[in-house]
Image 1 (tube, rainbow, N blue to C red):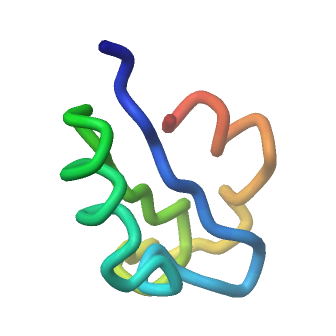
Image 2: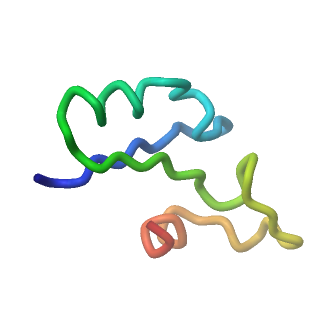
Image 3: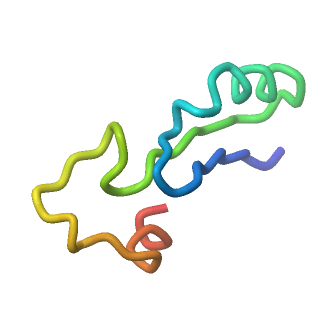
Length: 60
């Protein structure tokens, strides 16, 4: 089965998903990940100028 990845919108974090990934994983029997994009809550960078959509694509 394919993996499911939950992404968040701009100005949010992976915490917006709460228990949804766990519920989806249990009901679909799939591996589920939540991803915190660059310069968001659980990631830290000294220089925010390294943010771009292409960087996020590469990170993911």
